[in-house]
Length: 85
Image (cartoon, rainbow, N blue to C red; front, top):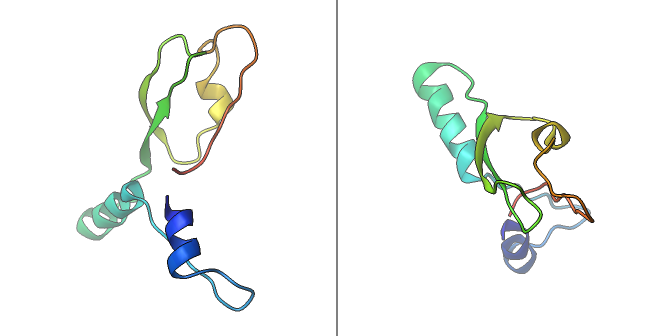
């Protein structure tokens, strides 16, 4: 939903940039300031009707979604969506 809010409240243009942070990034920044260490853990959802075992997975920042989906999807037509909600 950040994209919707940005579009209606502070639209991006050729001369204007807009940034947003998600809650996991805020947590990582807080841990960096309090411990001095970079926190790269992220929680992602593996879900949908074609998943063998829908669940939340703790992984690292920048993990390859294809590696996480090995043997996780049922046979048939599948669509993998990776991004922020």
